Length: 308
Image (cartoon, rainbow, N blue to C red; front, side, top):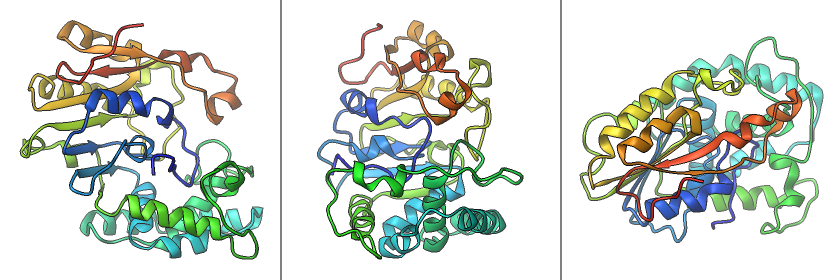
């Protein structure tokens, strides 16, 4: 199960450092991920147990809908993902996604069990065709690509099946993800929906992995995500500082080193790393930011990192 990955490309995913995150959090009973995105860290959790309380959240309704739909109706999502790459279809599905975005958000927030597997399949398929950001923004011209997400099945060795009119591997992939997500609570909303109040450590040690959109003053691309917030990282760090003072919280915060260096004076530790880079950086010719990546660990994390 730890080889599972999202069926769509996602800029800023943390698959390469997931082991470091779990090495710092340990076997916590409650795990919260307020900026879920592609879910790389959760999907690479070592030895996940059904009794663990896992809560994930994303402000982007399209992403929250994808994960709920895969959880509740994996075959229907697979049905609408199993489609050849076609420029006309990409334009048509993009329009459908934009058309129903507000309804999607309203229903996801109102009912924790609601999802739309057709729109989820459209989004996964379209995201796997798309180059760069702006998939569900008006005025963006579709640019086709291939061999990513559900269109790159040949690169995923743990999936087997016959590839024909119906690609069984897509159905297998969605079903495996559905099994892993069986007991996960998928919330739609901003990070405060799962970090508000004081209940998080009510059942013991709570592990939280924060991967908020990086701040605007870091020089990163400000159009990467559908649900953008250029100042949220600072608010998250302040919240994490206070909760991190309690022994019942183990918190890992991802960001650029320059954003959260001040946490080191508060007893936090840090591990710096270099990302592989992504399609947005590559297309713009700017790769320097990938060397600024860092994980910041709160004082009660297991085996705190060493500043490199």
